[in-house]
Length: 267
Image 1 (cartoon, rainbow, N blue to C red):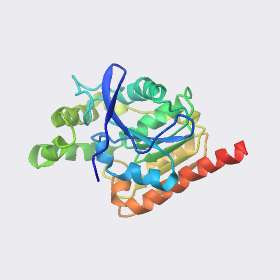
Image 2 (cartoon, helix red, strand yellow):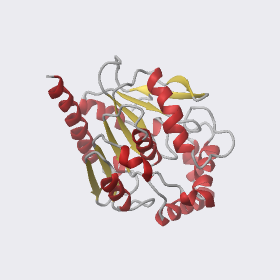
Image 3 (spheres, rainbow, N blue to C red):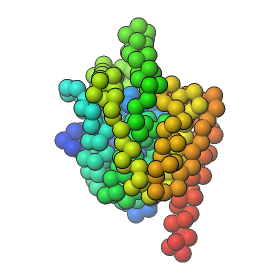
Image 4 (cartoon, one colour):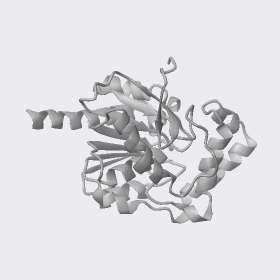
């Protein structure tokens, strides 16, 4: 895959990199990708372009502050870092790029950010596609992140992360340190779930090392909109990588159904 043509904008005082998978005229719906805790725009690889090809929907893919080629993280993350992204940075990005009609596609931290943004009920969201979301902290989450710290310090993980970020160490420490801090153990965003009214697709790997089926159960029980949850066998924390073809099909069908509903309503 050729490297995407990165552009830049400023949101919440930070310079962020982003790219489009296809031209967006500001009129129709678009996909908006929100990456995982150690992710970046580039680390989605060709998946956004493939989803665009399947659905006909342009996708906006960006690297959050502290990730990829966006501004390097300065200082430690706060417990509210996902709230800051969802409620401060993301609205500015949407406004700057004419993203009035969106389907949010979030993975891990990105899925939590998407849920907070939709659950704030201040901005229109057509639908949510949530991969391995976190709505509260589980013992499995902490164990997985502790294992990641050991791997970072004893294997080539640090070098692999460094290939995708301007400052890989700052990216890793910013994510790992806050998740392992005592104050983060009480982090919980379930109070946002009842205000989510749009359709939601949740995709979780059965073998996810950072969370369990309790996460999709939580949004299925508490969301005010319809929720379709899929547990993917023989799959870890990144279904779009571990089970790419099947996940692509499920996501595409969900997004197409949402846009078909819009066409029926307008017709």
